[in-house]
Image (tube, one colour):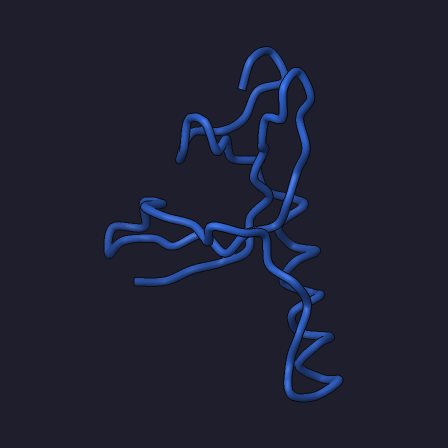
Length: 79
């Protein structure tokens, strides 16, 4: 099992908002879960915080996933 940071799209009424979550993958590399809440930046050292921030920045270059239709990609045309 592995994980990485991903941006997930959430629907709040008619509005969308986005949060970074940890997304978990099975042995075949398929997304199969995510943290219930968005993640914060924390570590035991400044170097650790820089590592977390770098990983979070990397997720901005990946497709956004839909909470309503996980693990499918989000579409601004309806989630």
